[in-house]
Length: 137
Image (tube, rainbow, N blue to C red; front, side):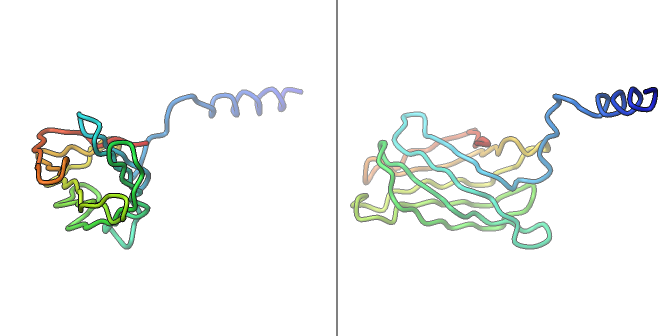
């Protein structure tokens, strides 16, 4: 009985409600422009040691889900030089896009800080954003 009590005590001590946290940028991320006109989600995957890529990217244009393509430049576990996600769908009519530049991934891997970004909406209008945050989903 004493051993059962000690076993239960050890197991209970090992259980915790504390979030174990993230250990890399791998996972699902999302961002919506302040006006709600463009929303993107994407999944980060590891391709090799300290090299990452984006897959399963989605884009909503004014609430309508459209097929999306991506361009990624220089993506490591802590920085991303450029992410460009653009509409590639006949529903979109024009090649709408959002571009994130010089992004930094937080040490806890919960946010991506982007000092400058741009997006196109409506067509022919480029909107500049600064100091935005892409979050985990």
